[in-house]
Length: 253
Figure 1 (cartoon, rainbow, N blue to C red):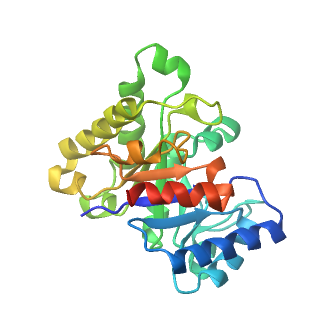
Figure 2: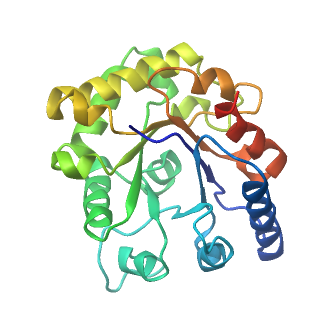
């Protein structure tokens, strides 16, 4: 059975003291509460080793917000899969909409990153999703189809089962807009059907697909109750334990 996952993407937030405090709070919460999902965080890369030390018993998964498509070399500012592996990070977010928008990442880049992550034993959280213009033009199903096929369909069946997919409606990130649970379910089911057509239903049913569009404490339960939504990739609400914990508890209700 596929996993339920709530993953917090901290983006470029928190100084070192605040980051340490939030991690300590999250550790205390995890020790005190049974959860019906795995809990992961992707703090800024500067704090990855601290996170690994704090969550030394794997109470919380530790993920990078990005990783290089290259193994090593003269790529200033990049983080390699080997570096992540060496600190026992669990994996990396790949292809986040902000990386696409601000850094020109394409699905071909994502394909190389996903394959490298898997080769190094890391879990990729592959992100895809349409813009507002594409949604309004009725292109959202085709856009997500092309993204999924280009980034993932060179993988073997055994490889793709190790990928976590995060659907991000770009128009619902940081805008206050939220796709309805039905809109989110439509795309999640679409992604799963694409995988089933390529690899078979059994493989498709093993892959966790997360929703990455402004999940909040007050809508988490309804979103997570959709049959093809297996959790969330959480942005702003992951920066406060009070909000993040209530989203995690969306699986407990």
